[in-house]
Image (tube, rainbow over all chains, first blue to last red; front, top):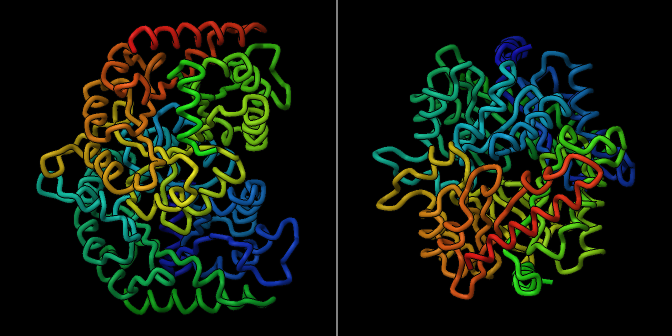
Length: 270
Length: 270
């Protein structure tokens, strides 16, 4: 299924703009998982099963798997999502960015090896570094635009001929790279005014918004700034606040409870 | 050993500015390797053993391993380089770029799991996205500045207050991020004038220069534009032209021959 079709269906059917980020850190896992060889998979699987009906997407962060030699567990996790929770889009948060021939390899990694429905991509190397992902057609390509971290301003907020660099990226995506309608943009929740500005530039293009929860972004301001006219258009990501809501064997139930509250908090402002 | 110490020693001892890029594409391997489970490792190992005395560094491109589920072969390859060719710096070409907590995971991946001596990093997310790599101190952190691909101009060539974005990145690195002296910059051989401009901005900071060989960059212009006063300062990368110089069982000897010619062509202009 086309990523955008699946995303729109998930927004509607689950009545949710919540994306749960899967950033598994074994040091924060409940004690009963310690030492288990598939602990990363098992932890994420239980989070997924406890929250799938509440989310519009899952977003595994590949760095957390790669640091632990756990690519096989990431493969198993995404397979599990596709099999048990069909129709739930999986965004591989990889922020890749390289010349075309190398980007082709990363696209194989994301879309064929890991079977992700979408990938996050860094725009610094320009159009031909993005095209190999766009060429898949039915996959989502979510470009970094205005990131939620403090250093995000170092380059993204520079003035480039009457607009900021992040605005130029938004415009490049909206006017050129999104010809097939499969692009999205990353805009941090820590900057609601800039979410509004990006929304103004890109029309209906979906925005992936990290930075609520542990990073301190405001839900009401994010929804007000970023929703499209039909009250969708956003994938509002929360990772740590949900994953580590509980510290014991009931961690998945604790995660579900926080996910429910977060979805409700978002929906209260739509 | 500190990456910069190893690099300077390799420049001098091997009398070489040549970096061999390890971008293994099984479709281009000699026929006798077809179907072998460790073909990626074996191919790269033979290239490494045939060229190590001719290079200042090796640069494995992680995408080519990840697309083939071959992270274990990348680990084995880097172990092999450290054991058989000690003192040869290994640059993991990964172009990572993410918020601090995620960058910490990528740094573990690159420096602890894969035992790389340096990593390439994308600057788009700014200072705190780079700091976790810098924190390793003895590892090299090589920031994308002016890349060799056609789309490189889309953002990097934008004017930001009287300079180009790539010049701002070079200045940020030289004036702020390189406080511990472990930074380098990527500047494509396809733009010699911009290599010269970056050299002017950054002083002695080493430049990793892809784009000669298959991508068409000019060796004489690259050396003239980029060398420091002592005739070093560059890691001039060639991948495909060396890796796929031969198509048969003698591929490693063919690679050595092209590597010798490339080193000589570089040295003729130093």
